[in-house]
Length: 420
Image 1: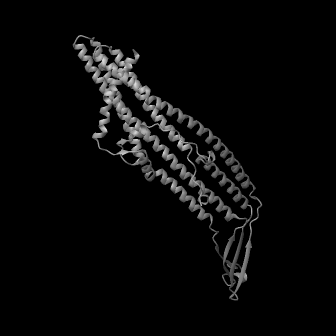
Image 2 (image 1 turned 90 degrees about the vertical axis):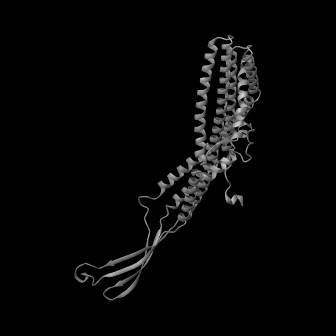
Image 3 (image 1 turned 180 degrees about the vertical axis):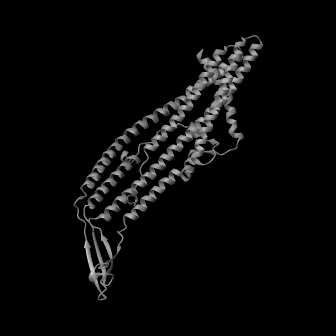
């Protein structure tokens, strides 16, 4: 009898399903596909703008790192405001010259190496931002498509409940059923209308979130894409080491190694050479003055800075190994989840849904003809509703799992030198 009851539910759903399918035909709104949504987000999202600005910042820092120290103008006046022959400006000596710092120890090359490593990290960050945006848009698109599908199911249930109420009234008026059946059917219709209203609000929120991501209003989404159960993407031939998260950790290690080189170069003191011209007031003669200065590494010899840089390098290396381990585990888990979600989606949208639909159809016909009771009908409707809802949830979980697996297995872009 449970099968028959389940069948009643499906009948109502089937009856309302054609109505839901005619709605898009009447509204000639274009269908927004997932590919179009991803393209729209890629060209309009501020997330991409932030990543591009970060890359420009790293490139500007590379130009700054290649600059040499600025020279200084040196001006001095000696033998003034003294006593005796040095009173006033009579014996003053004026010196005017130029001082030029000379970097030693490869500081400029070390700065450039750090800046270039940071450029590579910024490029990876931009790729990570694009991959995260793609995942975010896909998940929002899936949520909106699932919400719209739940609205259609809820509207179908409202139609089914109204039809059951009409049938109950006919049975009660004919004296074939207790007035309790009409009351029960009325409660079921009110519950269906409330569920439909809640589903509509949730769909408006999901579509609004997607619209805010894309910057365009959302109307119709791709039902064929949502209903498709695609196999999990094949494993990347490059392996986990080429994934974005691992590549980013490796870029952090390269930056830390460059920082160690820079810290070591800081231990070598710089020279400052100067050349000046001195004018003697008493004789009005001019003489050249040359000078060299070098700091003494007495209190800070740079060893502490090297120790800090080396510790950060070791930390980055450990984090790189952790990222590699996490990537391998994450991909294995995500692939299993994607396969499980695909199996669940195929089962939920296949034989189970077909059986529930047929059972509901039989139960509705039997109820009208007085062969089945109302409880059988309500049980069949509930079974169909649960099956259809489970099918939508399974499809949404499948697409989310696919999107997450694609995000985890996204390969890092190859450096330009490697591409050439």
